[in-house]
Image (cartoon, rainbow, N blue to C red; front, top):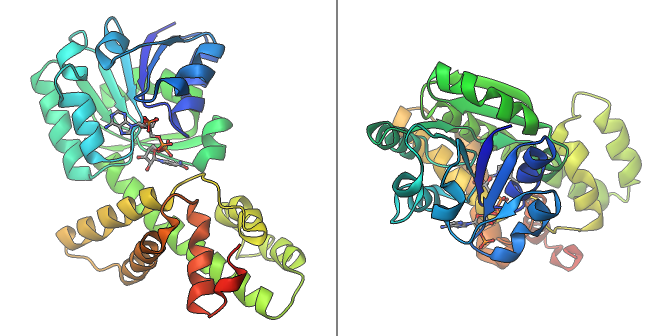
Length: 296
Ligand code: NAP
């Protein structure tokens, strides 16, 4: 039994916090919009009214917020985690953020007597709900070992990939692969529909061959039925494509396909689809194909 604070109870954080409470840990949740603490409270957790209240007395502090500035605010802001937590606390940042920011935050954490792991996840909302996430962890080996029992509650594939920032670098690669996959699937669906093929039958047989993927499994129904409630918002994937294209440039490598999909993701956002699931890249393919009337 560990005293855990969980900050950020959105699409991913909420089911993760609930799993930790169900596993018998004492979980106190904080969310900017208070009503989102309800599932955690129903699972036996507690709701806190501030970050300071949530982290007071916590041995482990989990964070799951959208972007680099959000994590910086939660950790280093006035009355944030570093201001309020007990020295020695282990901070696990599950958010997907810039690798360089993760490195800098880990330094600040160490200077102030905390241990920080970057532990971004993959597997989508389904992975969070089913406690089957892939978790790519950057940080000290001893801190990873200490976090492992917590990580195993929410994850199925939990891997220490290197020092601080490495988890975020691996997550950026993950987002490149996923975006390219989704775009290819969206193009295939529009192509199949244009020929009037039985799309469900086509996707079933494609799923059994080399074209099969977790993306095809999780996203085909959303595309075919145009059900684009998130899931993973285009806004967040746009953020991640910015991270991977900037990090690739920094490393001196080129990601031409990544750059193209980053532009298509940006176009989706510019066309007002930022709040939709990333499977809504399909709508962009329809627009480019002169079939915008088939978007809904
Ligand atoms: P989400 O549903 O938007 O949840 C984000 C949560 O963070 C919300 O509860 C939000 O509070 C809170 N928040 C936002 N800014 C904050 C701030 N400055 N201070 C304190 N709290 C703040 O997003 P999500 O889909 O769970 O994604 C969270 C992270 O996981 C992102 O980095 C994303 O890239 C990553 N991720 C998501 C998925 C997925 O499939 N959704 C998969 C893998 C990784 P409010 O309720 O007040 O808005």
